Image (cartoon, rainbow, N blue to C red; front, side, top):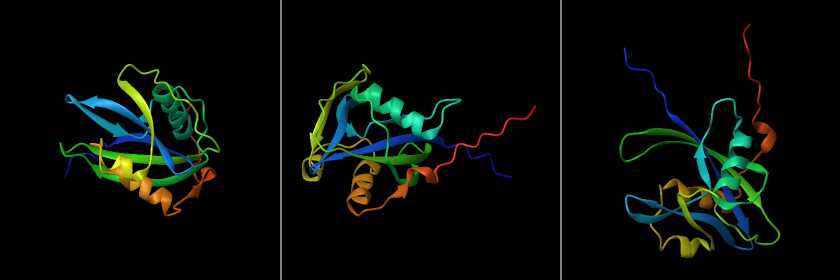
Length: 151
């Protein structure tokens, strides 16, 4: 019998405006890397609320995700398994972003081509952008928050 599979559940948001994507720069093992605003789902939090919280913490922006881009099952190089819910948000105008989280160095509005010049937190950063550009979308109401409580 195998051990129980317990992946890390994370959320991320592809924020797009006029051909540019909002990414956050963070230091990982001493190297500046890019990621979408992203983080772990917390207890008693639904997925869209987690996405909104991460957006605000990492960019200072109060945005609600508009759609679900994809759900990725991923195993990091160190063997850590993840299930990542990637949301999307389209803006009419780029907004000034200022990190609230001290782990985030700065925020960048970059084209896909500019992003490829940077080290990325994971291959999912570019994959999420490619899926967004390809029009991969599910309506936000595809995610149902139906927590059942016993008692």
